[in-house]
Image (tube, rainbow, N blue to C red):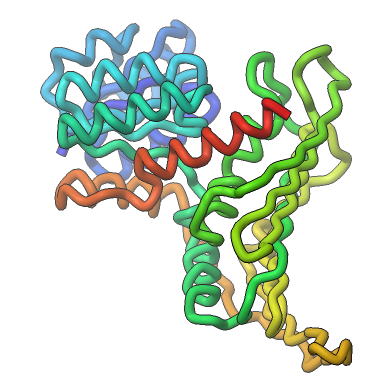
Length: 309
């Protein structure tokens, strides 16, 4: 199998390294000359091109797109229409209209379209999904996501489009649907029109609520998911890849029950390697990815609704 990577910058370099280690990297397209020089130095036998259009004539099975977010739609469209399978980093596109078009093109051309919603391939999230679906928490009440740090501010997309894509993908995946209602509030401190701190509140069917806080202007790195249900609570400490089950609840008579807490999952697997292997497996077996075009569209549509508030 032959895979090409488009964009070898801050995140693309990780795709390059992993696909190379997996033995499937065929070539890389990068417009930045210093980055191309670095690739040639680090991977002497790698074919390095200066523009993605040069890849259209290459004998490759798929492409992984890690270019700036505003370019995702046009590049993915070109390769899907050329009959190539496509992995595109988050966000899939910057509008639901474009996301819907990519999803339709992939279906019409029988192509794999996979979005880089990395956290969905974190084993802890897969454990949590199974735990919820099997009734481990009973009825879900509310979910809380935090992703904040002193991070890299963007000029085009705000902090939720940059950091919160992962969290919204997880919330939609765990609940199993898009939110019915959304309320969001953000603050622009560094730039006049780009929010660097955003709170999002979502309501799903059956009264399930979800709350999200994203910030790239925060004093500490916090990555945590808390899920509260009728039978107990799950807490995912992403930094340590550890899931706690708190056997704590309040019954219908408002009596409090605390039966202690325990770690129910712990693992340090590399979600990026698992994600990219899933992409290769989907190409080989012609199966839909977990984070397929529809999933990408659902997330972008949710983000778009947040921005309209």
